[in-house]
Amino acid sequence: MRAMSSFSDSCSTSILRLTNGVLAVVCSILVYEIIIHLRPSLDDKKATFRAVVLSLYPLHWFFSFLYYTDVASLTAVLAMYLLVLKKKYIFSSLLGTVSVLIRQTNIIWLLFVACTGVIEFAQSHLKDRGEIDNVSTPKENDGLSANHKGASAISKLRKRRVNSGAKNQKKLAVETSNPMVHSSGFLEEIYSIVIISWNHFWQLLVLLSPFLMVFAAFVAFVCWNGSIVLGAKDAHAVSPHFSQFLYYGVVSSLFTFPAHFSFGQAATLYQQLLKNRLLGFVQWFMALAFGFLSVKFFSIAHPYLLADNRHYPFYLWRKVINYHWSTKYLMLPFYVYSWFSIVSNLAKNQKKLWVLIYVLACTATLIPTPLIEFRYYTIPFFFMVLHTDIVDNMSWLLLGFLYLSVNCFTMYMFLFRPFSWAHEAGTQRFIW
Image 1 (cartoon, rainbow, N blue to C red):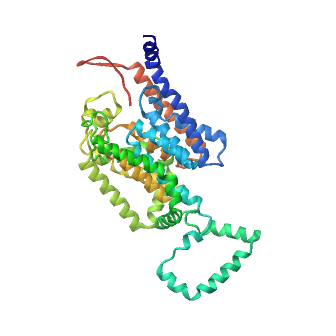
Image 2: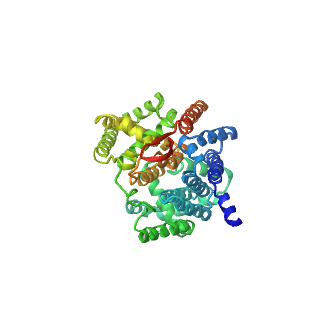
Image 3: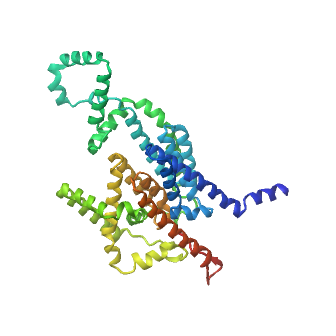
């Protein structure tokens, strides 16, 4: 009986909620470590300040006080990502397994992290341009075959000139000509990664095999379970909810508004449009068409969304999105602008292939979920903001002020504005 009592005490509401509090601290440390890794030249104080601001992100901060899986899920995914950046693939895959056990949809982020590992592997093996240039097209080979012997002899003579000047020149040549070092075309990036991955195929396979094993185990589980969902399968059935993808773009850009809703960012997007007017027009037209079709045919009003007035999406759906039949269409420009701004900001510091993989991961995570839950946006949001270059301190101060204001409001509503349901006993509270 004493053992049972001790176990019951250790699983009390306070202890269980404390678990998320501890994980929230660990998560903040992971955010700091990722910031330092991605921006090694950043001052420690600035990195700490940014980590503190991100720890106040409302969707993350609020659930740090409740026993939900969100904080544990984010912590496991960020730890998995940090370990991949540090090239500790086995430990990363173990944490990836933990993240999938916490929340099944994290298998998408495990694959995203594995793909990031491939990109990081390719970058680390770009010692010289020859690794890419050794594979040439048949046409190029025909044109160079006549001078092959002479070129080989010259190449051997050049290799013998080992001095500091030659080394510096070689280093400069790599930095200026390598498509993976500086911004390059999308096809060039893919070409580079494919060639390097092929040249180091077995090494790469061994390094990433733990991720493949986790993915294979997950596929086996889905086949055995008949669904990715545990529990109420009917309530969480996979649905083509394309509008969810659009909602995420607006919510995430609003929570990082200095990087997206400024005259400078609007001017940048306008200049990108003017660079190639035809291509820009086609892109915006296709994005608007996709948005229109998503809103028209793939806006899902889940029964939980319509019935549960404890959640803020219930009021956003009634008072904003579904206020008038035209409202959801009037919001299309904001949806499209938000996503163009997100992609534009990410592309400033990341490879185009990385941005594409991120968008695909968001698509695979968000579109199948029929219920509008802002909690689902937390992991993609952190990946987005960690790789968005918000450099000025004023922007971070504004974000901190925004997050604190929202947190004060949501905590006030939760603590001091309880209400009751006529059909159910007990106190109800407002939550995200």
